[in-house]
Image (tube, rainbow, N blue to C red; front, top):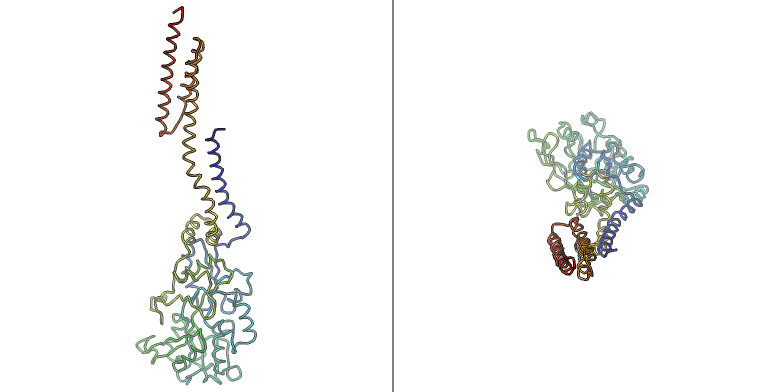
Length: 478
């Protein structure tokens, strides 16, 4: 076998082996470690549909990377947490949770069961960020003298339905002020938009935990028979005692200037709703959801285009969280507002090619290892690639050298020919060489060498002609 053939086969084998390794190793890894499907199911109940509206703004961003976002508006409060940390056979992997819902499940005001549940199950959740503000609205009748939650002894109170975040937060605040079922009537219901139960005297106080743009809140704020409780004198105490609380001031006339609503400044306690995910959610999905959240903050305007109370551009989403540990895979995205390089570069391309999201997830998670694998492959492949032009040139030259060897043989036969018969055989061999050379196909870059070969054939033909003349002169029959 010619050396050119050997080199060519060695290079081809090395390249095929390198390609096989780059394809086979990830494929084996994929088979042994199944990657997630491109689907995120989010629990969005509990804010009058506002959580769901916010979640839907993430869909377009996620779709670019082959991820479909599905909302579950039927899950709220406790049922959201149950779907995330207890019923993990469900497909819910993320959910909106009201501020204070989890923070109230620990400490001296929490029950033994609350503390145990918090320690066991809440540790399985991670925060993507705080996404919007939710004030705690405490409505009373205008003639009801309530200056502090301590004044609610003996009152009839709507505290929210049992599974909701409102119910748990309100329960904590009431217990901190000594208000329990023993000295007040705690009713697990929510105030409706008509506020008839409060206005008609069926109850004395109603708690709501909703964003300021919620239709119910806007109607209640304008109700002529209601007033908001003012937390101004105790606001700092609540913030110190409950780290998941903060305050805002609803300034005089902020709702309506004519008639002025509210009639005076009102300090309101607020919480911040969080978007949480399962701890075991795949890093690529966590990063993509975080990216979608921070790229699509809540709008500062409501459905009819009115500015939203307390909205401050750039305030949300917040990466910090006082109740949940931040998702480690989300932190870099939170700080830079950008995805990791491989996920950002390859995710949309893979999605456009209609390939499974599992490929995107694998590349995102194992891209570093693939690059490390590429180093030894390149260390072998690059030198071989440099040999490729040499091998190619040698292969072309080998074709020409074959006929040069044949031509040298003919030339030698002409020199040593002992009679006219041998000279005739040399002539036939020369004809065979010339015919073979006419059949050669070489790249244009080697044309000069081909024409050199033809010139050399003519030189040998001239030698054959001269030798023929000499034999003709020696022949007695000449």
